[in-house]
Amino acid sequence: MTANKKPVLEVRGLSKTYGSTTAVDSISFEVRPNEIVGLLGPNGAGKTTTINMILGVLEPTEGSVTIETKDVLHERSEALERTNFAAVYSPLPGNLTVSQNLRVFGLLYDVPDLEQRIEQLFQEFELEQFKDTRCGVLSSGEQTRVSLAKATLNNPHLLLLDEPTASLDPSTAQIIRGKIRTYAAGGEGGVLWTSHNMYEVTDVCDRVLFLSHGKILLQGDPKTLPKEYGKKNLEELFITVAREPLLLESM
Image (cartoon, rainbow, N blue to C red):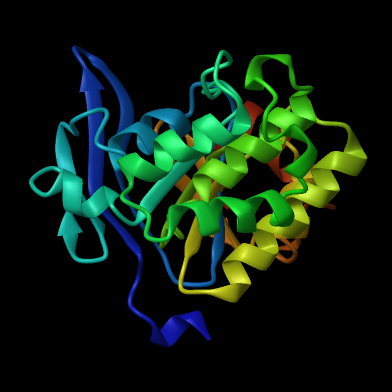
């Protein structure tokens, strides 16, 4: 499967320091086509800082980020052409309608056959009835669907999702997870996903990376990793990472 394909994302020796504080400490990992990788850890572990370096929003202190052979630091525009992003804390402009938002971002990404692509996304994310509605008056679930439509607009080979289902009701979150699984399985794209919902991570992710104090503490299959450390499930393992990371390092 993905093991024989070249990674869509390669992170090597990535670090970010602020004075004497190290937010991300020499981490290395990759995401392959058709793979959903969970980037997990308690608040302050370095997840969002890592994503911001992948996007080129922050410049790393050391290390490199490569998206399909393009170095983000030196070839950012080329690297991000096949990348996209969605996060609950990064809503689309609320004064624009759903159609206007998708059209603006489609022009920014130079999406071919843009009107046809937008119509396809209306159907895929069940947004037809909201196309002339301003995003600011949509419910949180509806806004999330619009954000994911925007995030898949350019058929990215790397999709970055930072807490994409936060604050959604269980039924809507299940629908969103299904759409992202379908997206990952259907093309050449890979997904890097952060979440605090361990049920969701177990359900969606092929592989997980646990960050603690800016370092990758452990990684593996979310369905089998807890047993390797004597835990019943991923949530119990997450709590141990958050409270007693040194205990895991010694195992």
